[in-house]
Amino acid sequence: MSDYILQVKNLHKVFTSKKISVKAVTDVSFNIVQGETIGIVGESGCGKTTLGRCIVRGIPATSGSVLYTAEDGETYDFLNIDRNKLKELRKDIQMIFQDPYSSLDPRMSVLDIIKEPLEANFPDMSKDEMEYKAIEIAAKVGLNTSYLKRYPHAFSGGQRQRIGIARALVTHPRLIVCDEPVSALDVSIQAQVINLLKDLQKDMGLTYIFISHDLSVVEHISDRVGVMYLGKMVEFAETEALFSKPMHPYTEALLSSVPVADPTVKMDRIPLKGEIPNPANPPSGCYFHERCSYFLDKCKEVSPEYCEIRQGREVACHRAEELDLRGFSYDE
Ligand code: SF4
Image 1 (cartoon, rainbow, N blue to C red):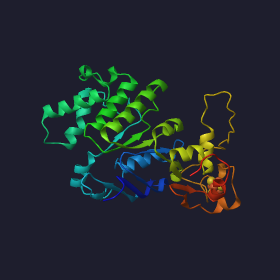
Image 2: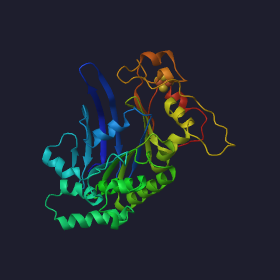
Image 3: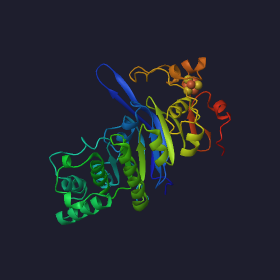
Image 4: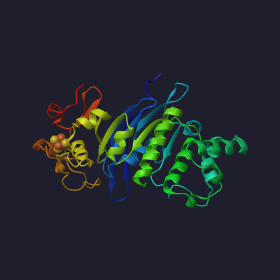
């Protein structure tokens, strides 16, 4: 039996139209242990949401595999199973969406919204049982169950996200892809939703892929973090190691832009130069070379290999080993 609940291997997603093709995700690989939270960060347009959607088969990947180890110990390529198997396993892998306003059908009552995945995945379940399960999960995520016959517009942003979470959890999934689940919410509500996700994880043994552009949120919730730039994974490490000693220049620049609440702390900011390049026409060599403070001539010509620099630490940079030797506090 595999040690991992999910193994993403060499995943590619290319969007093509008559005139252009855009590599949204290029050769992304990582593994997830059951009960773990993997954070995926990067600026807007880096491919993190596309990656999440490919993993849950919301959109078809161009190539690669997503090996899912089910509860019975069998491992399946989630991207290449037939319709019947997909129907059986779909309930195990769910998604929570970014926008709690647009992701809920305004014409359906909240009870019907939460019940919907049960209707799709358990056709033999009685209506009474579906209703019981929907009410049970609504209570678990902190919704007032006397209001479930109301429509989404009657709920606040935080409550709507709780409805989205209840809908994702009602089938008792094992893995959830959370796509920017708190970015549309006020800061005070963000903390409540994050704490709810952490409590539910403990309680239900959930595994999360947590996609966000917000580094503070990702640091708070993740066990390991992957950093994406222009569709590629450029660094992957345990959260504490990555935040105390970033090895990729892009990660370093991203971290140095996070505001620190203490005004006495002097920030050595490493500005991110320029804009993210057009993914339809990416730069040669290292995709980050036009914005990198550590640029070498070869970076313009040769794409760096994504490799393990030390145990559990993968980086794609020609200067990774050199940057690894700098004097940070992180030690293995
Ligand atoms: Fe910067 Fe070169 Fe490393 Fe790319 S390969 S991140 S350009 S130092």
